Each structure stands twice: as C-alpha cells, then as structure tokens.
Length: 406
Ligand code: KIV
Ligand code: ZN
Image 1 (tube, rainbow, N blue to C red):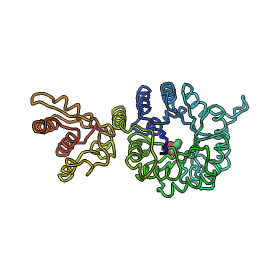
Image 2: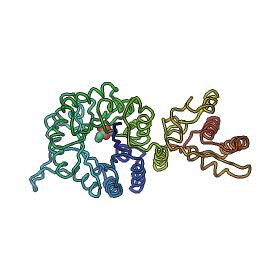
Image 3: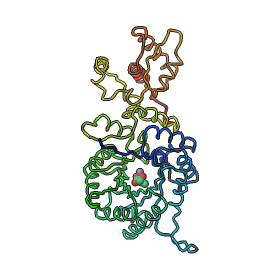
Image 4: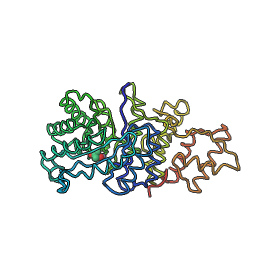
C-alpha cells in the first residue's frame, strides 16, 4: 500500500494563528509528541518572523532526530547588497540558521503566484515573481539538501502561469512542490484537476513529491486533501486539532483516521500511529488552553459518546452499529473503573479530565452516583459507559465539555 507522507505544521501554521502561540519549551514538548506520533516532517517555525520563532525552530531542530524538520522562509525579490554586490536573502538565511542543528533539514520557501496576491500584496509582475522563485530556490538548494517550494494561493492562480512557476522551482532544485489552497476556496474536483495539470506539465513529475496544504474556510480541508492524494499527491500538510490561520488547516487526526478506516477504498496509508492521536490532541489543548469543540471528529469529547436510547442499545449489543472506529483505537484511555461507595471521587475526576470533561462539584456528584450505581450492577465501568454518563450529565447541566476555551 502506498504511503502518504504527513507534514505536520502545527508548530508553524497552527502556532501563528491567534491564541495558539507556544513557548520554546512547549514547542519542544509538542514536537517530541508529534515525532512519536509518526509524522514524517515537522515544520518548526518561520524564523524570520521573530526571535522566539528562530529560537523555537533551533530548539526543535536540535531535539528531533528521526523525522525531517522544516523551516519556512519567504522567497523575496532580489535585494542587492551594495557592499557584497550580491542579493541578500535574510529570510532564507534565518531559516537556515534555525535548521543548523537538524538531523534531516528541509528549507521551505514560498511565494504567492495568484494575480491577486502578486498585484495587490507583493506589487510584483508575473515575470519578477518567476525570477524570484528561481533565484531564491537556487540559493536555498545550494545550502540545504532538501528544498520545498510552495506557490501560495495556488488554487486561485492561472493554471498556465502556475505550471511555469512550478517548472522554475523544479529547475532551480526544489524536489517538493506544495500547492496550497491558502484561503480554503477550492472544491475537491477543482483542486484535484489543478494537480493533474501540473503533473502533466512536469511529464509525470518523476522524482518530485507533490504536496497539498488545505485551509478549512468552507469546511473542505479534509475533502480537498483526499481529492489531492487521489490525483497523485504524496505529501499532506496538516495540523493537530486542525488549528491554523482563520478556520484552520485540514486536521491531521481526521485524515489519518480516514485513511485507516477507509483503506480498502482509498488504498493509501500513513506512518501515523493512530493510537497516539488522542493524547497528542489533549497535549495541544493543555498547552494552548484552547479546547476542541465537543463534536469534533476523532478527538472531540462527544466523538464516542452516545445519547439516544436506540444508539446506546445498539452500542451495547454491538459497537459497530454506531461506531466506525473504537475509542481505544485512537488512544482514548481504556479503563475499567471500579469505584467503592466511600472512595474514588478524585479518581473519577481524573478519569473525566482524561476524556476532556472538567466537572463542577454538582456534575461530579451526579457522575459519581451514576458510576457507583453501574459499578454495583456490573463491577466495572468501561470507557464507553463513562463517556455516555459524562455526556448525559454535562448535557443536563448545560455545561461545556473539555478544557474551556477561555
Ligand atoms: O496557506 C498557505 O499558503 C501557507 C504557505 C505558506 C505554505 O501556509
Ligand atoms: Zn497555510
């Protein structure tokens, strides 16, 4: 089965969105977790953006040994340094500095290619942008063995011009070509057609890895990522909990579980250890203090909770009736709670916290009464039953689940 490489950009695209900034120590902790999750590439930061971003990238690059570490840099118009009589490349130099301790470094440089961005944002002509792509990618490739080029706003770029831009990047030495749906505007067929055209233009794209990077402004991030791999893309850029600019990026946990659950239909897989998804999601919410919505696919507190009587009855008879994946498969802790009459409130509070619930005193009391009643009857309280109890109690009290998004 073919492998789709996962490029995790939680620490860059995710971290740069409001409310998600992390300290250097937090970035290291998160990067270690993402490495153990099985991501192939971790984008550690955008070093020219700030001192903190540079230090965070350096620290992650030194720490992570088994996967590739990427750093982002703008491809800029040539700025000739009179003293040195050569173009200055501050962005790429900062990214190279950030990557200096990396075992497997990747320089990721980008330039917008849509007329909208070129004209209104960059005030560059198409020809100037092509020149900048060639010279920046070449400069990066002379200093870093692996270079990725992203054509920002690719999905709104004139397709013939996009092909020309990609051709320039490839000829200058980029081996990974990322074509983002920067503003989450594309629909799946359109996004797939763009990749097919580029693959044709590159004559099959032998030796080039095509990459998709989908924002979720219309809720199509995962659908567009799926369409892209069906068109020949073999790298997906994703974030934990789908965090990222505006409506976020396609969520890593959703794509990994999709390719796992529907592997017979899709025929592609990832190196992600799906049993670590829940812990990874929880670590991010704990570090940032921002909860995932309760109904979020795969990692939301209600993702495995069943409320309707018919559903509960079905689940007890055979979980497959209403669950396409078990909570344990994505790492929701498997527990058989045994609670006595006079003990166990703290254990129950801890168990609820692991599942994303933070009960007040009244909610804890009610959960406790129900758990003890169940334990009296059946000796143990499995995770699925605890999720159902918590869901019902929190619903009744009108509380939000999980760590509040203050
Ligand atoms: O959304 C986007 O276009 C990006 C690029 C910089 C890769 O994040
Ligand atoms: Zn992005």
